[in-house]
Length: 178
Image (cartoon, rainbow, N blue to C red):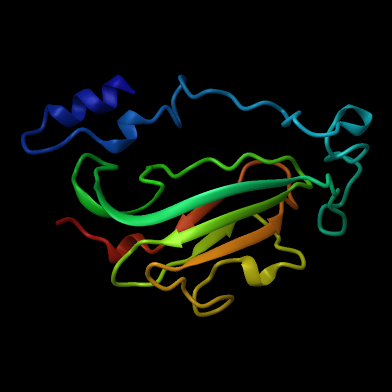
């Protein structure tokens, strides 16, 4: 992490990369627990007897009965992910964006408020099957209309796959250096 910040400062006119402020992707990154334990643990795990070896996740998703709630505000702000200031779409002012933690089978509810003055936005969730909630997939113009400026939309879907997924916010090609 210190190396990335140092190398960015060595070049005249460059700024400290925003990613240098984040431990994500470094050895200093905190590790996540195997599961969140602030809910019932049937058979010692939130998803009971289901596991990666005996469950076809295309057909079956455990239901933990738990909903995880998140509240995001999307705004355009200046950031420097590679050391050069550009206009970025940020969720809660963060790059990388906020972490969603959930157990396999939990429901996830994310209220997204669009504070981008001049355009709609949406959140597209990579790595999820969206079984039964395909209208929550967040592809503007296809599975939903964009969230209008200064409006909110609440996504609700189940963590139907185990492991790590990522979110896609906006189109990075739309936002170029100032």
